[in-house]
Structure formats: structure tokens, C-alpha cells
Length: 451
Image (tube, rainbow, N blue to C red; front, side, top):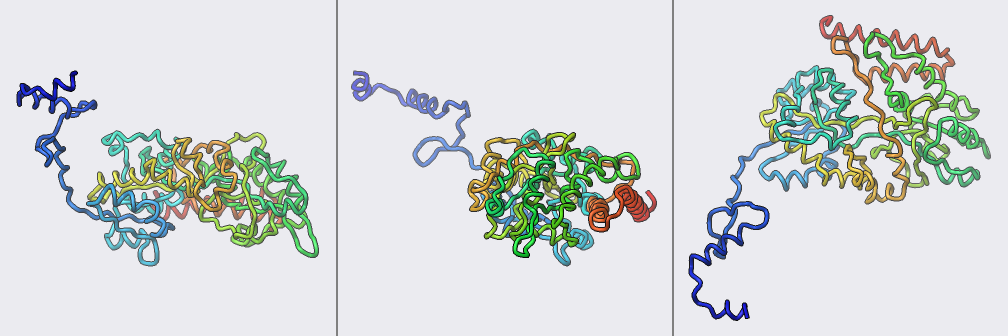
């Protein structure tokens, strides 16, 4: 009856109809209707103002343009059609030092903590992001706090010089399933200790038909640097090696694997790191690293990184790189928007599916690690997040001379090699490391005019 009445009524005024249409167009969100009729006679939003085209230069080390285009460019092109991205990868003639000398300073840089001092701070490029974070009400709690604190500590000013970009490189234990099957030894499992892994390594090390099968190999630099105590190499408060007793504990723990008969460490660092890929090594302690290539014929899997008695049950990891802005950039606001888009949930979700660990605390994204990857989708990727990340390694006091991270890593690795390969007494090797660190400090002081 109501429908018939409305159909037959001719008394509705034009004014009433206009009010009705206006009420309907308001919607439930309370957003006022924009002015201007649409072709159908309704209302339409005023189109956003057209933005002037700009070009942003992004500089990275070690990330090929193909990878950048695959991971980031589609979302950037869609969201910022007015921005052209000029991508520069470090090479001969295009290192960051070259670009600074040529006054071609990029707007955005991908930096890491070991290279932060020499390749960002010392070149006068540093720009703190806190003001832009506050202005844009950007939520830093999206990220694992370890990564945010790491950057604040690394700059030694408290400023946030970058936002963490995947990947980061958590330590895990790889194992060759075919070798374990062949020798009838149970597979390693998540949650093992170093003592338990050592017993397995002894069982798996053997010689058959003249061929040596090693029970264990490693990336020793990563194991020493990314330790569960977050133990720094150079002491944060003094010009000396940090806590030699803890370094002795680490050296002792790892050395015993290489003391197993027929499990000698290869003196060549690269060869030791690649030994697992030869098919004759049962286990390898290394990073989960998307750039680590294991031959297709190796039937491998991973478990959580072993824990050290007396240390916290935390996962050692090489932290992520960071998207940073240079203080010379004329487009800091636009650069910040580009960075936050590259770190969005959507982009990191796709990264995670490819096997790239997220820097976010989002558990749903973490659970998708490797889901669409042809290899990682068949592996125990839960091992990557089995333990939470270790706290940031304490950094030097601002008033003390610092030494580039990679130089410190070389010193402690050489000390370990001296103990394992040259049978040098551990105390002597660590005293030599202390002396080398002091020489590095003297070099840095001389380079900065004695400051």
C-alpha cells in the first residue's frame, strides 16, 4: 500500500525531493558532500589538486635494481604517480663518497649499522627523522623495538637516522637431511643447546671410502658478532676489548667443534662459509639469508639457533638495513612518504611470503614467511622466530672515538682464527685483539684531527 501511494502521489515538491537526496548522499560516515554536480545529477568529490612532478634519488649498496623494482616500485608508482624514482646502486664511480664529491647527494639511502659512521655520519649526510615521525603521526611501535633502538644507539646522538627495512638476518642451524638419513642419526630439532649440537656433530663427523664428512661448519663472523649477550667487541666506555671472559666462553664453545677429528675449519673464510653447499657437511650455523645460495641438490632444512648455557634464550641476529634521508634533500617530506610506503604492511607481507623476514611485530605477517617461495615454503621457517631477537649491542659513548663495525669484526675473527688454526693461547689472542682495537682507535683519532 505504501509503495502504491508513493507511485501515485504527485504532491511531492521539488524542495522535499532535494532534501531527501541531500540526506541520502551524506552516508553513514558523516562526510559532507562535495560541491559540483556529477553527470548523473548526484554529487561528486572535488578531485585532489594535481601535484608537481619531482624526482627522488635512492642510493643503496648490494641491492640490485631488479630486486628494488620487484619489491618496491609497483606500490610507489601506484601511490605516487608524480614521483620519478632514480635508483643508484653503489659501483665503481657511484659509491656514496663519489656522489658526495660530485655533489650528487641522493635523497634516500639504504644504510646499515656497520657502515653508518663512515658512509653516512662522517660524510655529513645525517638527518634525524623524529620531526617527520611526529609531524606525520607515524607509529614506530609497528617495528620490533630492538631495531628502532639499534639505530638510535648507533648514531650516538639519540636521533632516529633511519627506519628498519627487511631483510634482517637471524641466526639458524642448517642441516643436511640426506646425510642424517644416510648415517641413521635423528635430525636436529628446535630448542637445542650448543652442547647437544656438539654431540650430534661428533656422531656425524666421519670418513667413508676416503671421503671426509664434516659434522659442522659455520659463518664464524656472524656467530661472534651476533652473540646472545649482545656483547660488543669494542667496549662502550673504555678503549679496550669488551669483557674478555665472555669472549673466552664464546671461543671455547665454538672451538671445540673444530677440534673434532676430521672437522677442521677451512682457513679460507669463504670456503668455510660455502662448505655446507658441497654436500659433505651435516650442519652449518649461519644466518637465514635470502642471498645465501644453497645448491638445489642439497636436501636441507633449518632449526632454531642453539642456545648457550648461562646466556638468555634470545636469537642472535644481524640487524636490518635502514631507509634514511639525507639532510641535503630538498624533498624530505616526499622522501618520508616514499619510505613509509616501502615499509607498509602490504609491502612487507609480500616480502615475507618471499622468505624475507619482516621488521614488524605483526604476527600474521611473520607467519607467512616463505609461503610463496618455491624453496622456503617447504622448510621449517618457524625456526626464524623461535626465539625473540637479542637486544641492541651497546654502542660507544658519544665522547669516545669509535671504530667502524666491520673493522671490529675483522679483529675478533682474526683472534678466533689464531686460536683455532694457529693454536695460539686464547688469552694471548684476546690480548692481541685488544692491542689491535687500540691501534684502530688511534687511526680514527688521527683521521679526525685527534678528536
